[in-house]
Length: 208
Image 1 (tube, rainbow, N blue to C red):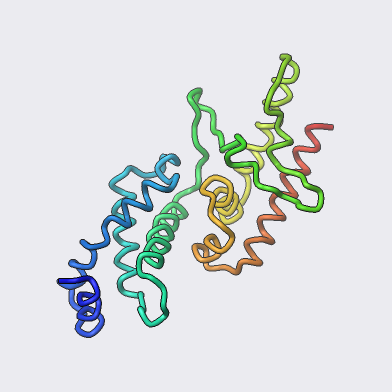
Image 2: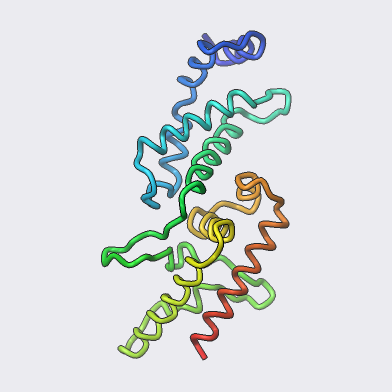
């Protein structure tokens, strides 16, 4: 049955059988979200768990989707699938990645911390962590800064830590974060700016 006809049938006479057919048609969206995100790198769940969460998100998308809104189902479903997976991640304590030496680390590379923090000052958080060191003393200073930042992030409350993780590690936009956490964009921005200011002050203290 063609997808458009399938949707029409499902919206007119919803049934589990029709829903199963729609799910089969869009299972690739679950794989897409998993393979194009960094959830797996967080090592919180295994691939089967992520897939199951994604399927649950797909179920919700099918139930709630309204074609009359003019949004493509694929676009809507991807957000619901991603949101469902992130919601499951929220249910467990967000833990930083563990490096090869067994030490907890976040993404301190330019990949995750090179977002502009204050446009007026032109400052970036990652600039406060030296990228290249030439002496043992500089290496010690860099490690001290990283340790301070790690400890500070670990001590954030769950929501603040999650927002920082989603923004810098998962690279979600403010809009995507607000949809995931069910809070306003302005609130996400407010929390982000507050936390970044706190982290910057801590790092400036280490540098003094």
